[in-house]
Length: 147
Image 1 (spheres, one colour):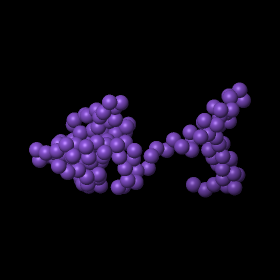
Image 2 (cartoon, one colour):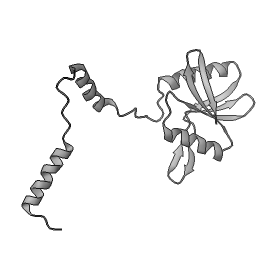
Image 3 (cartoon, one colour):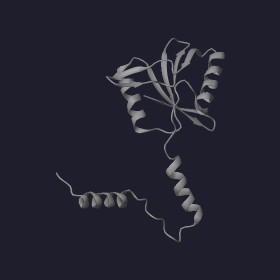
Image 4 (cartoon, helix red, strand yellow):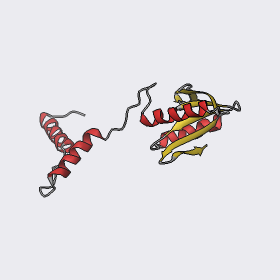
């Protein structure tokens, strides 16, 4: 396809209109305008740094330490194993825990579930001989969901 200079100019003009951010209504309060602009910047989600716990994970590690001192847990590790689910797909549980009876569990600490994380833990539960548990902080303790 051969474009003339005018075709290219028209195309570029359409692209500018297409990519332009829509103007906000004049009557919208200023705090809403600021909230919308802020949301465009911060609504990208948390980037996980491997080997670094977030606050909820650190709180759960303290809970596991209590269980270890009580003799219910023998050993645990944060991001201690990586499980291969498919050729280029892996799953790293937040904690691997060995209970006093010798069973090994993979525990996932969640504040909020993303769809891909729920799918990965279900697939891992079908593939590996470990017990998979998701834990969520509750006001009085931890809520467990077994997969």
